[in-house]
Amino acid sequence: MHRIPALIAISFLLSGPPARAAEAPDPFLWLEDVSSPRAMAWVQAENAKTLSVLEGDKRFAGLNADALKIAEATDRIPDPALIGDQVYNFWRDDTHVRGIWRRTSKADYASAAPHWTTVLDLDALSTAEHANWVFKAANCPPPTYKRCMISLSDGGEDATTEREFDLTTGAFVTGGFVLPHSKQTIDWLDDDTLIVSRDWGPGTMTASGYPFVVKTLKRGQSLDQAVEVYRGQPSDVSVDPVVLHDGQGNKVALITRGVDFFHSETRWLTGQGLVRLALPEQLTLDGLLDNRIVFTTQQTWSLDGVGFKPGSVMAASPEQLTPPPPGQVAVLLDVPLIFEPGPRQSVDQVAVTANTVVASVYDNVRGSLLVFRHGPCEPGERHEAHWHLCQSASLPVAANSSATITTTSDLDDSLYYGVEGFLDPSRLYAADAASGSSALVKSLPPRFDASRDMVDQYEATSKDGTKIPYFVVHPKGMALDGTNPTILYAYGGFQVSETPFYSGNIGKLWLERGGVFVLANIRGGGEFGPAWHEAALKTHRQVAYDDFAAVGKDLIARGITSPRRLGIQGGSNGGLLMGVEFT
Image 1 (cartoon, rainbow, N blue to C red):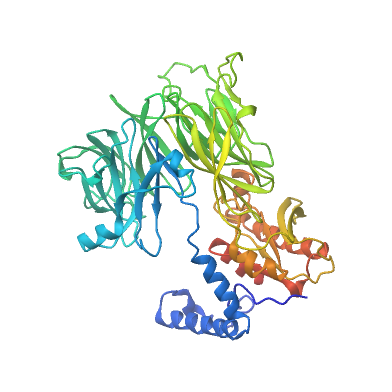
Image 2 (spheres, one colour):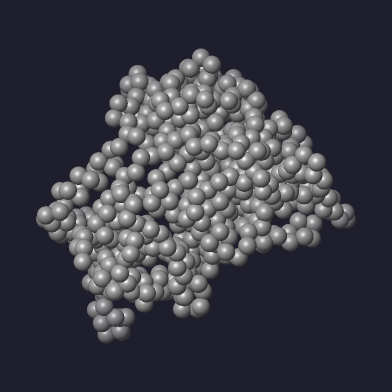
């Protein structure tokens, strides 16, 4: 049997059985004040106990050195972002601590050693301005891709300073747009007009600390000259503008009012004012194609009397989504459905190129990339007023892998996408969505020896009969005698899907030493769409705990491990899951 130190230790207190009337008050109530000096001192003391055990193990130094080497590796893939016909990347290393924003051509990016041109050096800027700038984002709209609004954060906080930058000169624009420090969302209406939500003064921020007033700002105007176009409510989460563009030159300006964390209202800014669109309140906006808003509905939804299931990918023009005048009946002229997932499928990502919609679709938690067109996929096919799945253009993804759309172009149908699995390091492909052609352009070297391991997928039956899938990464020829040290990991919240991933640390520190790693796809996540998430909300939260326990029991029943050799792990929402499971 291989003996491996725990990767995580969790300390917790139990306050005993339910209090009776005659019992004294909870002696640990002071822990509810989580940031109090007494509570923090207790945390530090408990952490010290854990660290003394871990650091006192004779294997600690070697394991720590292996982990540090992986963390400090510089041979990582520079994530591409397509702006016009150039590839941009934000890069940080020990030489560029705050980072550099840089660019190269597509052809050069595909080479082993691209020649990068630095566009903006955050270290130099911070030194010159005696600031602690963190690069947040760059908004460089078509069709020229010349002017950008750069989002800079002081030390990494949510609030940003927005400054106009010229890509042709590589400098901030003298006398250009500058929006001072605030939590804010901005976009371009045209070359000389921004649409902005920010702190405009007292009474313009929600109780959650985000703006709910949207204004337009012309070049040369001061903030107090901005013109209000929409005002939400202080009880909202936030109100944000977004301007969608497509490869045909169309542009749609939207304002989304986040009523709460899951529901929003969408309004279309027209020359005649705002129009509330008949979009679902639970949705993801994905882009614009042929002047159709592409979105994924997260709820049951109907348009003109036709119903669509949660998790479906849709596309409809703003005019089609505009409610008809009183007394008139709308007629569904163009079917808006692009893709409807099956009961064991989910849509993880949707992106738009100049002529296609590309979707990252998971079938029983295994990734694929599907390509859709409005009309025929191949020359000579009959044109119909609905969307087609282009079989010849669907992009290759290895089995038991995740598929991530990294960036797409609206000039053509080019895109970059990533693939990784438990035993396969990240690989980046350049592809053409129209033809389905793809080529490997970057890959990470392996961080551990995976030749002795394999991946299986099983199902456990939860308390209510629901089948819960889980992946098992284990040595080939593993004995099913219950002796295998096993880590069971899960998250189960916020519609986040836990898909196959590559971890150098898990591989080097655990799998290479004979350990077994298990990833459980419990309810609360998004592995099978919105319904999988909603099944574990509020008073139904118990099902997530039951699912996790069912996977643990199934591992033991199969002989993969035994109770004394089963460790469980989770972070954030998964950390709360661990507390319940331990209890």
